[in-house]
Length: 177
Image (cartoon, rainbow, N blue to C red; front, side):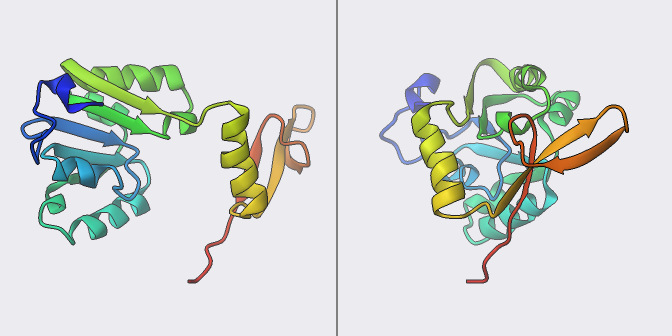
């Protein structure tokens, strides 16, 4: 989103001064921190506690980013708390939620009147497939193994399968570097 959307000077050092942003699915804070440096009051949320701990550790290294309000919660819980923001940002999150339409409703409910919502996800194009799947999984081997997950309604049991066309499960390991 461009700073002129908020009628702010794009050439000043803190163009988001006085604005409240929420970074939904903030992970380690890679977006929250630059937004805080640009003057926004930032709340970073993630459903994964480990991500929030990492974000806290990294943010504490800089006095400007140490003011970011990181919290292990969801957009839906912020809606229940009746929180509102000038900008609601969810980058690379919607593909991980169970109900994308309900998730979008939550993002909308978090957005103050006249505010902005920014959502991103991996495209379903051949180029995205080539870079995000082929390169990451098969060339760089970031994903070591994948298996399909199938449910047998006759036995009521789940099992692994070679077919990843519907559901898949994966795991990875981190190299000690």
